Length: 178
Image (cartoon, rainbow, N blue to C red; front, side, top):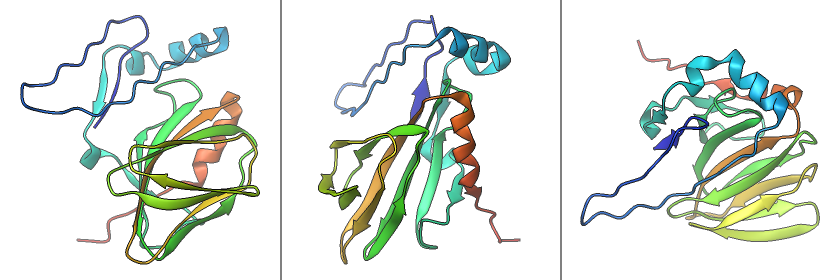
């Protein structure tokens, strides 16, 4: 599940007795330009925005195999210059090497994630509940070996609003079932 608390409204998480919550809280300082952008989408900042994972739209991308399932968790224009999604597959598979000069990323390994992330000349193992920074403009990708799982959240932090054009590479998956 993903939740966004509107700017200026208080937010609180409660966990039922006997349950456990794993949460990552991200706060973003908004520029004057970001504040103006928020005004263009008042419906996105009027109330908390909460989505179940199963309701998040799947998409495909040229740098990923046909068996890879990616989902958009936080689409553009909810939080200015930010988007969040997931990537899931099993090995052997890979997310092809690519570069985006318009954004920085964080990867958060989800349950069972056991992959190698490549960024320029570096290689790093990303396990579940670990976070990895992908620097602005680095050539990067990920690989998962046979019997392992690739399952992470990507968090895109765009330098400018125009940089969000990158998200157009995410092509919605159309369910072919009648």
